[in-house]
Image: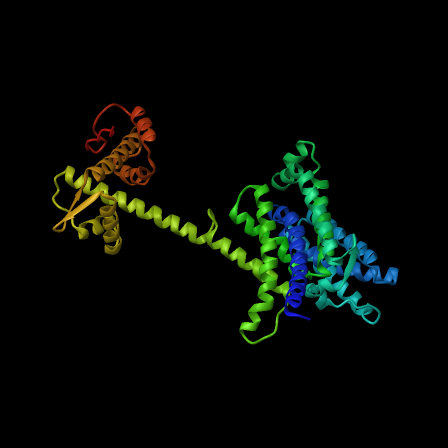
Length: 441
């Protein structure tokens, strides 16, 4: 075999594995988004574990490992899991998590016992159920339209397509039932039927997936890509798209990592399904850190920026008041003491305000530029208008006005200042006798 032929076959082999993982991810992520929104994320895990007795019973009844019999048995037990979970929650007066725990642990244990009894007659390996055999996807092929296509790809492709059609066709019903089942009922949508339809999607997806990709990966794809998408967007249709993209990226990156990364440490390749789940967790970590609205790092930067803006405005306001009262020159020590800030923060703020042109510093003397004076004047006007408003309308005592107005002044725009001015009595002095600066034109 020449090198080019070897590379082409290798790409084809790896491509089928990645495609199988991607189809599993898409098929699981679509119902998984609704599970996450309904706070039923672990139901996918429960159904994936609970299908074991269905597999064993199907073998005992049919006496064969025929895929259709095993599939039907597993789906029936998956639906039974959803039904028992909901029944225990409703009639047993326990929460959803406890009911899922009772059902899936009991059925999973029963399934393991049945598998042990059937072990001499059928190859039902619990380890294979957990980890799958996605690496062997290209070996079992069907002839489709004159081309050999892996059986797993065909099955998962059909399941992903059916799930997609259900989500598109019943998008409104699934959406309303996920956010407000009571509203769905009042609008003529059966929340119960929608719930069990979703459970059927989860059961079929879990059963179709775990034979090849394993329980660990299918459970990860039910939860992790939707949770990642929820961090990135708050629109349901976009959440579905992002979850599918994250799932496909996890499959591709996971397979590459399973093959290549162990070689860096002198080891052979590792389990592909497990590495795909790890890749999904990596994407979730990145989203948790850097998501535009909810990322930890992004929120930290936003808070840091806000605190810096508030400190900058406080420095400008303090310099304005000092000049207004002719209180002399303020130095860094005075600013730090009065604003209860560190010298490092004050120095950084002054340096920043000098760069933007709000403050000048000559021989250690800090002065406001015309632009800085205008900004400080607007801030002081906001503060004193709030004091006047809180005193007249809210009845706050004079000794409680300053702290309240200090919090509100940083969020006051010209329109709000205009409304405050209209809703307070005419005058140029605030409750403490200080002059309220005029509005800048």
